[in-house]
Image 1 (cartoon, rainbow, N blue to C red):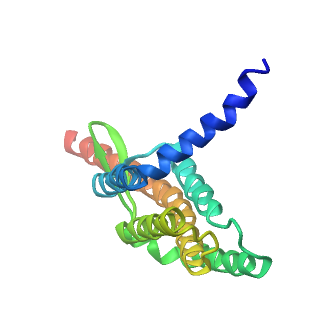
Image 2: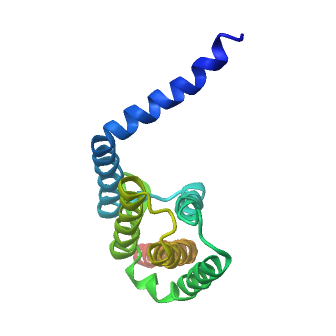
Amino acid sequence: MAAISPSIPSLEALFYSFLFTYKIEFFAAFVTVFVGRRLFRVTSGGKYTKGGLFFSPLMYLGFTAVTYIDLDLVSLLICTVFFAIGIGLSGPLRGQLKFFEKEGQLYYKRSIWITMGWTVAYVLRLYLLIFFDITAGLILSVILSYLTGLIIGEAFQIAVQKRIFDFNKKRLVNKKEAKDELDVF
């Protein structure tokens, strides 16, 4: 057991040495996968599930919370205010939400500008952290907080719009059934 414990710090040092030796490659791979997935999801839409609708914004919130490392109390308060403003201003976004059905499954598209704005800000934040070791970036944390607020507010708008979509779909089916009954006579 004593032989293992001295090797653990050297394994950790080896890992970090490897990571920072190839940080450009790791960062490029991360950006390619992360941004590529975001672009694909925004352009093609996401499958509507209740869990996915709220899990995704919580992931955004978690990623944004990581950017709060080394922020002081005043900076955290500023980020919280902008987060609340983002949630409050998400109401007018309901016009940008679109529902559609594909192969019997319900899909929705979010605002491309909000999602890509958050993605660019997050990648820039990671770039500064990895390449310049800047941990306390108030401006990017404020931008991420605001956009995360918009994303969480947008999730609530999606839930509301889903109810309206279901109501309109049910009403359309009822009108079609009533028309079919009248055509029989």
